[in-house]
Image (tube, rainbow, N blue to C red; front, side, top):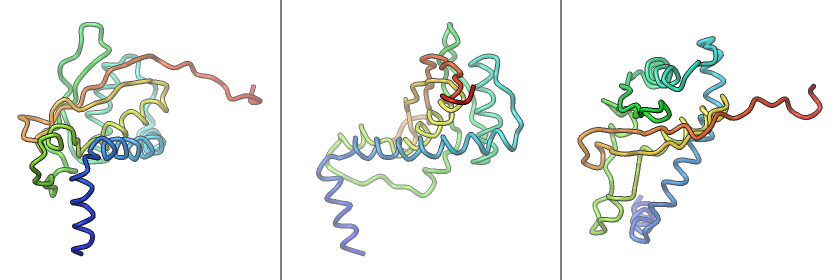
Length: 165
């Protein structure tokens, strides 16, 4: 057990928080790509008519279905292409303590719940929405609230795979 702890301490001491964030995002993306199929099968949801409707579907149905929480949707941009999801509770952070370190960079750069961003991005990409998803605040890092920002980059074209006309 002490060998594992030493390895973990070495990772934090060598400043790989960006690599950890990337791996968490990648894991989340792979989960999201598969999770959307289960979501659509269980809900029978049709294509949303707007990004605002998508936001409500994510917060009121998807988060409730998979995590049993209902975050709020706030801070919609004027053009309707950006919004924030505010998590009033975060199941991923309930039993987590970030490493105590003298390096303030870890506290600043590590986003433990980055998995959510990957899940959202992966699921949305499967329904033809190219998005940028990132954390703005996280209570685990001492912020006032946990806020995830979603920005619609573009709506991808529905294309029939080659040979399936």
